[in-house]
Amino acid sequence: MASSPNNYQKVGFLLDMDGVIYKGKELIDGSADFLKKLRKLNIPYLFLTNNSQRTRRDMALKLNRLGVPAQPEDIFTCAISTARFLAEKKPNATAYVIGENGLGSALHQNGITVVDDDADFVVIGEGRTMNFENIEKAVRLVHNGASLIATNLDTTCPTDQGIRPGCGAIVAMIESATGKKAFSLGKPSPVMMRMARKQLGLRTDETIMVGDTMYTDVLGAVEMGYRSALVLSGHTTEKDILNYAYRPDVVAPCLNALPENFYLQPLPTTPKTTNKSPSASNKVLVGA
Image (cartoon, rainbow, N blue to C red):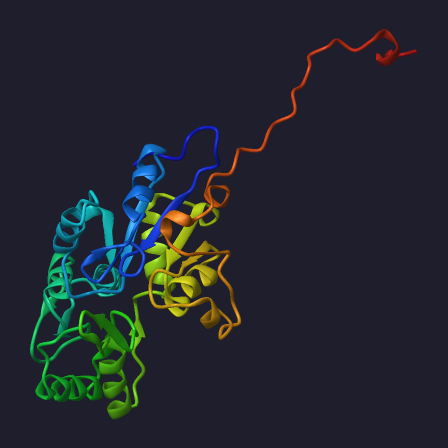
């Protein structure tokens, strides 16, 4: 996508998905209209999610079926930030993985080999197919020297039937058993927030993060110096904000209710200058 219109300051959006664009299987009212407005104004945006289960292609398909045009390249997941970080720090590394297809696919695409033994990393994502045997193996590998990596530290995941244990809950078991702390690469990690900003080609002061969660979306923006907007279409209420020492720049009922003057700011005007010749009285007479 191109930069913002010439008469406005350049800006771009990092957009959380569940609770901002959709809730479960339902599109949130107005979110598609807001995205259409951004496309019309040539304002770039990137979907940002702590969901490591699905591939970008899977998530793009869901968005398209909900009526939101999207390509896989429009989506940035915590699985991608995890895989890119590990590949940068240790090319051709090995990893023991607890997670699903989205995480495994991201690791493979970045040259990380998934193994059952002698792993450089133990990488934890969300998943419904894990068992206690997986936890045992992860504990042994970390105890023997593998680095513990979390795709995110969310303790719960929302589902249509209610919440279920999230990546953070699984990681907590392994941390408790080994005495080792996991390094997290999902929101609010500055690693993920910086990677996403750079993918859009934005500066810090040009980036706006919109989410429905204070301790991931808003905290990540505050720590990176991005502008932040909290929408109340997810699970956070205005009362919940009082539990935190930091605040979003804007609070809105939903994405489409964000005030335009928050993201459409005119370019500063430059005073006009005239090229008048200096008057005789103002001329400096050399040798006078």
